Image (tube, rainbow, N blue to C red; front, side, top):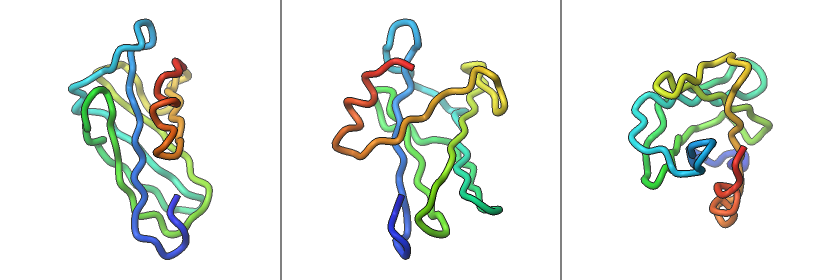
Length: 103
């Protein structure tokens, strides 16, 4: 998260096939909702960056704890599903290591 007063935070994540761990590309309906305590939230379609990596850039009201939720109807993942995806947030230098773990 950005420090108080910083403008934006970019969250990058890798979508991988659960069985093969191969990157999933071409998703056009991957929606991420970022929520902060109180009433603030933002919903965006994730931007594909390549090799199964997607990102969203948000401008939160301040640095604080946030939650992330994902929906991708083409992968049969819906908000509120009991089989929700886990979005792991890691510093940029360790994002590759985090992406190699299979949830």
